[in-house]
Length: 259
Ligand SMILES: Nc1ncnc2c1ncn2[C@@H]1O[C@H](COP(=O)(O)OP(=O)(O)OP(=O)(O)O)[C@@H](O)[C@H]1O
Image (cartoon, rainbow, N blue to C red; front, side, top):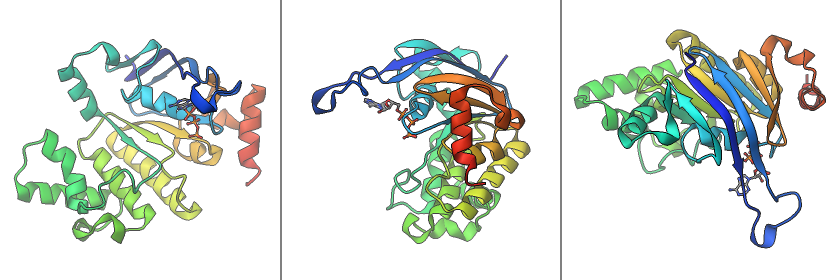
């Protein structure tokens, strides 16, 4: 059984108010289907406005689809009760693009990473401190960093904190929505390689949302290419540069100009 199944997900946004236009009318995504096996990373690659974040939000339980279903570990997310959803939240985590808005600026790094542990685990303060120190080391930071606040960290360091928080409960799947897009190229590569290491070490699965073919190439096993709200092609990553659909070729080529 696949860890996650997205089955014909459709979401249409109603165009409204001052911004109603031909382009925005009926925007959203349609007929989105894919599966993620345990230990696998599926990349969702597409240009701005293609529908990538809409897909991510539906998978995370943040946006109810108009049609279709999301099955996680065999359970239908939008037809399950609160208890099941609570377990779901534990096994399904997310890291978003904006590392600063994902944290409370008044909390220390210890409080930030400790939050899911306090919500789901019963740990003594000492045990929690040790666990947070280990998590910081796992993502390439120092245990002492737990005393800092977000404003004392760089964007790359803070994104590592967000990753540490996401892996704290040993989830099955992490939705990574453009997790490195706001960072410089060197830090991007370091974090992607680190995510790859974590995936291999803990058997994690990822849904990796990105507009960047090079980033997708580093982390994904398979890539679903999204254009105008639809998956136009799903392809093994090592075949990405041999994609067949004209829209896929356009998306792949536009990024590889930087190679
Ligand atoms: N809340 C909303 N209300 C109306 N339209 C929306 C809403 N959210 C997204 N859209 C529209 O749906 C389409 C897909 O948006 P989405 O944010 O999923 O794309 P994306 O691929 O993640 O884009 P980006 O890479 O720029 O974040 C776009 O046309 C967008 O304008």
